[in-house]
Amino acid sequence: MPILEEKGYTVDTTTFSQNMQLNPAMQEGSLDATIFQSTAYMEGINDERDMNMTGIVFVPSAPQGLYSEHHDSLDEVKDGSTVGVPNDPVNQERAVRILEELGWVTVSDDAGVTDFTLDGVEPADYDIDIKVLDAAQILVSLQDIDFGIVNGNYIASAPDRKITDALKIENTPEQHRIIVTIEEENESKEWATDLKEAYESDEFREYIESNEQYDGFIMTEAWN
Image 1 (cartoon, one colour):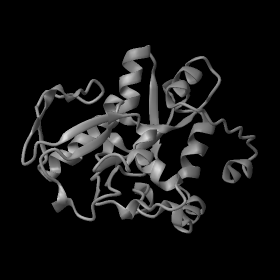
Image 2 (tube, rainbow, N blue to C red):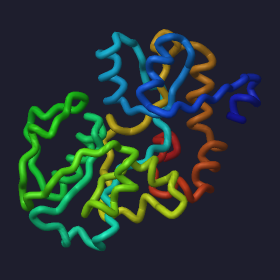
Image 3 (cartoon, rainbow, N blue to C red):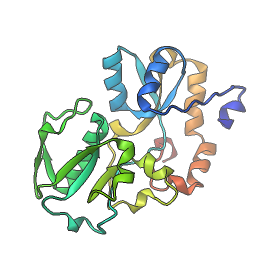
C-alpha cells in the first residue's frame, strides 16, 4: 500500500485461495491484518477458534445482490422458481434476508447469524426452490437457475458485471460490512493506527471513487 510505504513501512500482501485460511494464518502469526471478513463472521471465528480479533476500520464493501440471466424483473418470480444462495452460514443469512425483504420467504426469530441454517426459513408469497451453492459458483451458475444472490466481490471482479445491475441490492447491515481485522493486543500499536488512517485517507478515497470497479460499493463512514 503506497500510503503506508510513504511512512516507511514495508507491506507484504498475501492472497489466499480460500477465506477460511486467513484467520488461522493470523492466529499462528503469519499475518498482522486481514481485509476480507465482516464483524459477524469475525465474532463467530473468535468463538470457534478462541481468538481475540477486533475490527479497526470499515473498508469499502461490496453488497450482495440478486441477479438473473433469465429474468429482467422481480415480478417474474413464481412458485418453483430456483434461487441460489451461498453455502456458508453468514453469507447465507444475508442472502435469505434479501428474500425476506422481497416477501419471498419468512425467517424465524431464532434463525441466528453465524450458525444460520435454512431450517428456520418458510415460504411466504412464493414457494421458491432455494439451491445452496458455493458462494464463488453462484455467478457462473446463473444459467442454470432463475435467480442467484451473489456476493458483491465476485461481481466487482467480473469484467462484464456491475453491482448496480442487480435486480435487488442488499441493504447491508453494519455487522456484514467488511472490516480491517487485527489481533486485539495490537490495537494500540502505531502501525495499527497508521493502517486505520490509510483506509480513511482522502488519497484512498480518490482511488476508490475514480475506479468504476467500485461503483455501488458501501463507502467508509469517515468519508461522509
